[in-house]
Length: 255
Image (cartoon, rainbow, N blue to C red; front, side):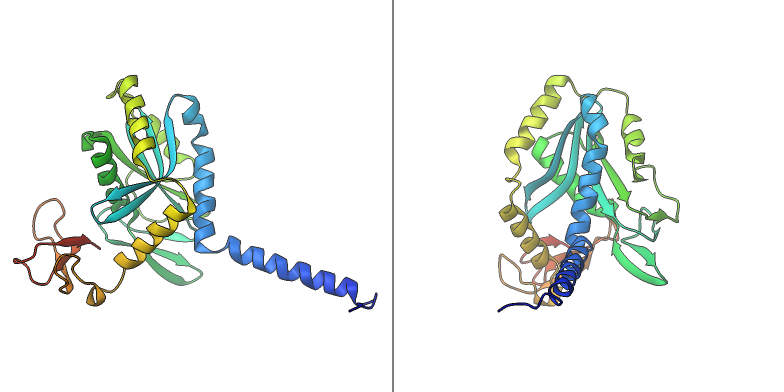
């Protein structure tokens, strides 16, 4: 088919507009926004890497309930730092003890999981993998993009490059260089391969974990899983899934 010469330029412009629209939509997708945020933080950690901090990115570890994926891990004589990235905009409201935080954007409100609680699971997975005391593991939340923190946050919830100063505030050595090297090697060998297949398997695990409790079955006995609440201890008030046949079956899962 021969395209008339006067139509060809118009078609070329339309094709460019379609391609630009597709690229724009892809860049605004949650997955791509997350990746862009992680790339920005990876670049921001470069000064720390030049100062002897060992950095690992996109670390997927096995857990009792499947897998957990950590954005960034920094290992140093001053402790292990677990970084969770949030590429968001708008106003952010929340407190350390709230289960859900709020993002306000153009007069609309969106709820999302408290990133401190989200990162707690990463800390426990790292603690199990490295066999180090929990007091030497430090959670760091990094908001990149144009997000504005509208409520008072703990010092480990930061914006932009603010996390670098927070990490540098830990100046007392708790590990030897040999221990740091051993932890780095343990993560390199203990992590799952950072491939697309690993990411897809992790996403599948997350979807299964986030299913409605009414549709979740106990992996041990096949009974329904129900939402329960921790009644005492440091996790008091937190929800989890437990087998409906308790105490006959004591299987639990994280929400």
